[in-house]
Length: 391
Figure 1 (cartoon, rainbow, N blue to C red):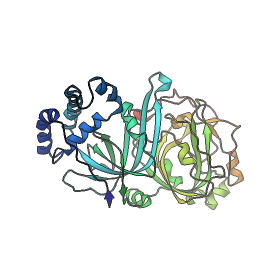
Figure 2 (figure 1 turned 120 degrees about the vertical axis):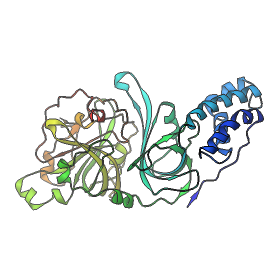
Figure 3 (figure 1 turned 90 degrees about the vertical axis):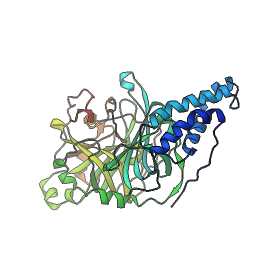
Figure 4 (figure 1 turned 90 degrees about the horizontal axis):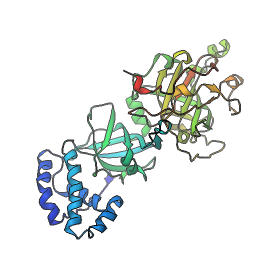
């Protein structure tokens, strides 16, 4: 099922003497069964580019002084690791997004957000069933995912406070977590989503407001428009107009209602699907005062994929956006519609990007659904409307 392979690494004598009490403590707590995990941690520090100059200045890896420096670093990490339960996670990455959060407030922080499916393995070799997971990497940890790409499988050491949670919140273990590519037979993504969530009709989303950032809704819909647009802050974001059977009824057509889901998502997701594609999308919904329903599209799986007319992937990195920032009309951006009614839809442009919430979403863009013509006035918002406002 998987091919990981672990190379055993011997600890230097000076390090082994100081680290053995911690190795034994980890064995007693069930964190590991031998010295291999601690040896791997020591080796990771020894080969970390950030430490290379210091190690060389201390006489190189053969120097006991340099070895003691590495051991000191390992002990700092071990003191934290021994307080947490360690697991091995086999992850299938669906979406990965690198951003710099907090630029608008003068407090920039590198971050990386991921979502996908995972099979978590305990130290005794037992594995839990496949689950949906999210992972947020901040500051120095964000660089751990520099080489991580969507649609690839990896394995790494993680901690997780609650394995019974519907959405696993995986955390890295300082100095021990490292993404390593592997071959692993994950189940089809569509199957997992349909097992976890019931499909919600677009017409019913108004009554299905999310209670938090992981209270997802599953939508099965056809793409009426998909494209990449620019915000005033210089970022790029994706916009998708979606319709399903609940919005394309004769009753809706005869009543003149223009019912669809106006989705703000990542530029990467929007670039995958052309008009008439059928997708399975995971979204969160939120009601924003007089401007009605809005939501975030976290990920989308193509059931029937029609290639976009212009397949051009943007290079700009998107900072966190919120639905409340996407209501102003921009008549300079053309819309692609599948009927004349859609031509009256308001094309929105992103305002200055708000800082991400403390537990941001993998895709911080949002979705707007309307049953009547959208309002064109600028909403009264200070740019701080995010999931932190939820109780």
